[in-house]
Length: 500
Image 1: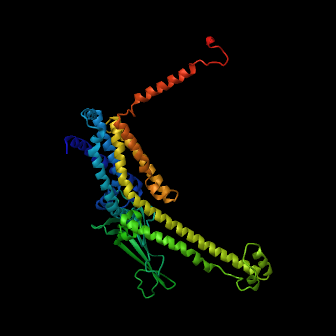
Image 2 (image 1 turned 45 degrees about the horizontal axis):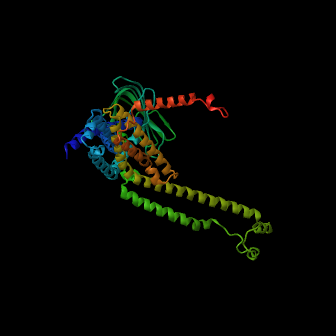
Image 3 (image 1 turned 90 degrees about the vertical axis):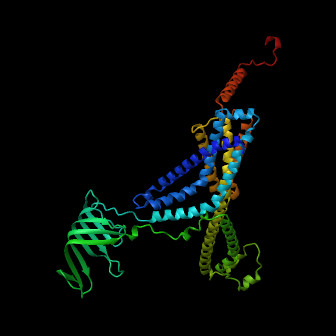
């Protein structure tokens, strides 16, 4: 490797790693902002939250690579042009394409890495990340008692406190309803009233403990053989028991508040959880199923028809051809007309329902095929977009000759947004069947690749495409030409030339 290649690569890898980290951080912040309501009030430990961020950081890498390559290559050649190093290379007989060769090889390597990552790591990270996110979303919020409001998220209990002290543990005026969970008795069979109490959890946070002071426990029993300890009332064979206490400890399990991991196999049907081989197999299976279902509709629909006149001698003598013969036959069957009309209406409704359900089923099946095909193409398109962004970034840097995080960042964001919008538009059209799936998947690259080639051509010819002076001079020339055209005398027909 020559020194010039080492110089260019050294100038490239620093901004590339920094940009990649910044882009991943921005995408993670977008994730947090989008799901902030799901994370708040959930008692997530640092290990669970760290795993979630790790999985989604992996998911953002294929999207972040094109922007990182675009910005770092633009900054590399912008710095070389700003400090006249590109000019020195050209004066030494080194062309722009030769100077770009090390970064071109680096872009090809990054493209290959992007394809491998999309095909092997992304399905695994999607499965782990979205299954964990689903478990977090379905987990209950942490215990949060509010003054004067019944709290019902604890299974089998309804709890109300009149006042909650600043320490969050000392409670005043507690009312606790214990609901029956036996499946036979229903309603509130036990009520606990306490003047004050303390609330805390054990060391493992597995149980919630209410330590109650100065209160009564009211219970109702339906069993007549039960012993009445302090009761003064009985109705309809039931017994009412009141127990007074000075210190009472109620222990409630917090099992329902923990994150329960769902079986990850429930999420494997999604196309994002599949690699290229699995997507191809599933696409072929769906196509065969679609074809077999389409062919079987005609034969299956015969069960909804009832050939009422097949044994009628009038019908057998009448040839079947275009005309009003059906109406004439119905007129000869005046006695059976109401029953036939009702039967025909019922059969028409049945066949309509059967047809509509099959149309919906086939449409969803076709959309699933399109989604799987689209994801198969995206394994390649995201890798190729890295190379396309390199062409645009390196050429733009050689043209504008500006480094740093100023103008290059602005230009990179504009092109990345353009790439992102084209990708979303192509995906939407492809999923809806409005556009051929390969055309929708490759739309962004097909549009931006000619732009990259054009910018490369302009950079090789030292174009001043983004110089302000070029456009100012062109505008002045246009205005001057327009003024000269207005002031030019007009020759009138029929007048001698000497008079002009």
